[in-house]
Amino acid sequence: MATAAFEEIVEDFEFLDEWEDRYRYVIDRGRTMQALDDSLKVPATKVDGCASQVWLHPRIEADAFSFEGDSDAMIVRGLIAVLRALYNGLPVAEVGRVDASAELARLGLDEHLSAQRSNGVRAMVERIRRVAAEAA
Image (cartoon, rainbow, N blue to C red; front, side, top):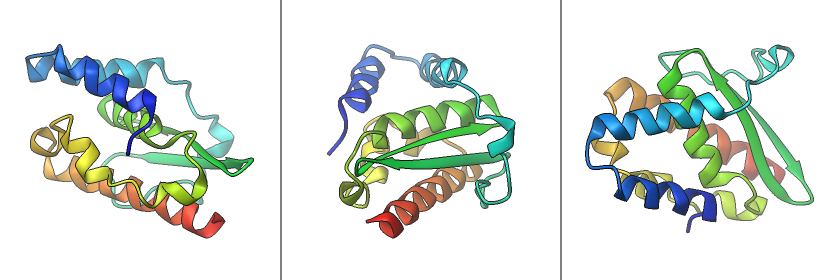
């Protein structure tokens, strides 16, 4: 189960043969993402378990889940943008049903991220799932 925005990323990846191009694509997605306001970069929004600084600010409006995020590392900002495409707009009850590992594997990210980056992505997904579960 994936959103239309995530399916668009999957389709874009199919046209990119080289991993360097795919990394650039992910980084560009992060560059175009609006920066998280500094007032939201607080301990409550910081994600532990990431090698770089990561903040996620979730919102639930009319039973729809979304979040904003930011990082001090460009590739991680891009990964946040990918996760936003995967989760933003889903009903809160469906967030926990998303198999993020399987969806990200469709992009090949599971094979091309360092162990530290993979741990960081897992930490972000766990935070997203926990917030949605608490709100459901």
